[in-house]
Image (cartoon, rainbow, N blue to C red; front, side):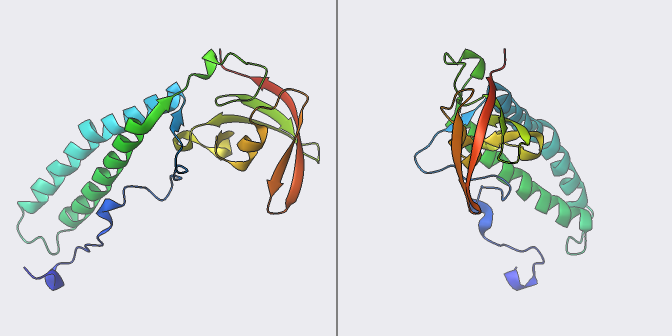
Amino acid sequence: MNKAFVKEQDSGDDDDDMPESSAALPAGTRNYLTPAGYEALRQELSHLMTEERPSIVQIVSWAASNGDRSENGDYLYGKKRLREIDRRMRFLTKRLELAEVVDPASQPNKDQVFFGATVVYSDKSGHEHTITIVGVDEADPLNGKISWISPVARALIKAREGDTVTLRTPGGIEELDVLEVHYPA
């Protein structure tokens, strides 16, 4: 059938496995993850493979058996959802293959800020912030988990309690005072 008569759009972006919400890793860097972050990605991949994808395949199969597919919402939505699931599974597989799990609990220099550290710092206005430096794929800034490649994390890396570090922002240079550094037990 001619593509002009098919309602599904073939955008050709199936090769683009990077979801818009995930940040790209800088060239030449590793995909560092905490053990919890690695396990969360692995569980998501497992869930997609064993539960979500088979149920959508079943729905698409049922919808296809109903006949006319051109106006069959279950079929059209199901095929679109299958593409999304397959894209996410390819992305997760690649990220897990590149992952380097770093256990913050085994950090020998617990008085210095490195990957996995939880840091309490204050800004120039005196507000205290608590952040944990994690991998790109497990960052959640609203819950205090920032990526190790973020500007704040880069400024804090290798600092110790009592140090003042310089953070370069688009709004100018800001100084952060490191109040506490600790790692999970």
